[in-house]
Length: 372
Ligand SMILES: *Cc1c(COP(=O)(O)O)cnc(C)c1O
Image (cartoon, rainbow, N blue to C red; front, top):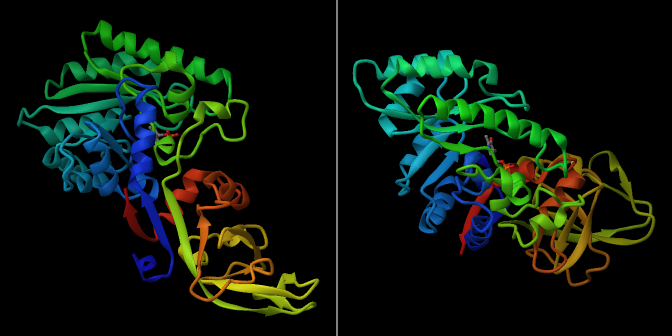
């Protein structure tokens, strides 16, 4: 929480998240908003409360502890823990807080069964299968074994069967239909065994691009926060209309001249080739504004793009304001967003050498304020 002492502020527009949710609702049938990792940096509680007010009855978070934290907010619906229980302690959290865990190992299923023990309290679970991404999930070849195990566990109800797509955001990637085929065969076996459950496969990209893979429910994350998973691809239009919900700003601490030939910041990696004016902004890598943006990033000051000069420091970054003569200490500088010439999440991610997901998760750790 030490970031909260710093000068950087992340403004979260809950109305933009609501707009994105409504847009996604027109593409899906039943949405399970993914609000893991503190709602991708947008704030677990405020985002959950907003989505619940719009009718969301299930949400997916990361750890069991994050699920317990969500249970302490006014959201009363179903809470799915995507990472599931790892320890006995996690299993008791599942029971105490009424969490629906995602399970992907047999020993995990047995551990949960033991935690329920004599008490015949029914726990709903979601079973995850690895259909091609090969990260977490039962092997589809194990489906009969899993179904057999469940026959001895009357206390466990199958709420959902899920899988995760590796390349839904790569237009036309053949792995998507391959994974969908394997997933459908797993679901068919569960149906044949008499289970009624919610199948869910689609993430944001699949929800936007593959209506035939809707299943019973969909798990959008990034699109809720306004980044287009198809940005820069031939399918970019499929994500049209999404609105970024995070804007990040920091104040100007100093404005001064940098004379031709002078360098700036550690290592003097930028040297002025003409007389310039620079502003020193109160943001740096301690605020999760990556040092990788040195000599590369751009910010927005009074509606003008201002390029980063030299190295990003721990709490300070220099920008070129030679073309913004009115720049003054106290001015707000946008490192993400801004009213005019705004920095988009995709642009910032490209300068940073990453994706909007990481930009949101990291910059969202700053002090947040909410509108909408
Ligand atoms: C994070 C996550 C999602 C959401 O993915 P987006 O690309 O953000 O839409 C869906 N399902 C699982 C299992 C996830 O971990």
